[in-house]
Amino acid sequence: MSSNAVASVTKMMESLPEREQDHVVEHVRGCIAEVWDEAQWEATFGETQKQLVVAARRAKEEIAAGHSAPMDYGRL
Image (cartoon, rainbow, N blue to C red; front, side, top):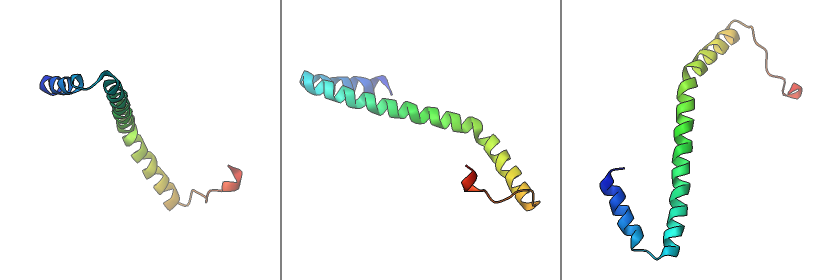
């Protein structure tokens, strides 16, 4: 966020009574936590995506070659 945006939000926050400021801060903290979680998920998924593609191709090849059997859910 640009410093102008931060300054603008700060001014808006300062215009609120302290109790409402606290409510807004808690809400913003929750939003920021969600954004961080999503960024971490994207980074983790991005790191493993190539491996998932390789595994999926291998599974398709094994199925096509008849080297697989239907999953027995009763054995899980």
